[in-house]
Image 1 (cartoon, rainbow, N blue to C red):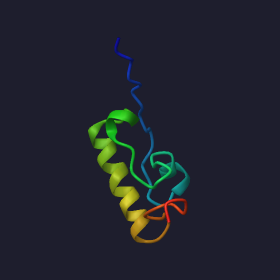
Image 2 (image 1 turned 30 degrees about the vertical axis):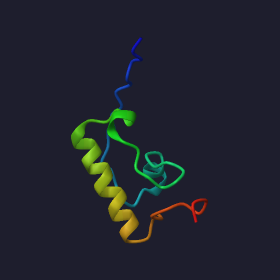
Image 3 (image 1 turned 45 degrees about the vertical axis):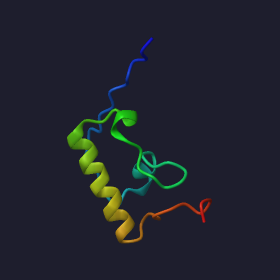
Image 4 (image 1 turned 180 degrees about the vertical axis):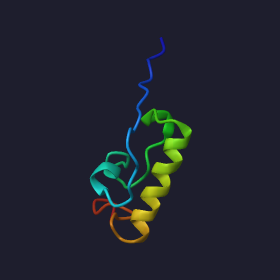
Length: 69
């Protein structure tokens, strides 16, 4: 039996400076959760990934978590 996928939509602009919102889409190890699990559209997921990578580059978010180190 297949389970229903939940279609999630982010209504507002995905801001790279909002680390709390971006943290919801990252695992405990620091990996980005794939689109098939989050339920985002392709366009939204591309924007999300770009925002996460920008936040990592300017040191707002870590590349890996402290637990992995």
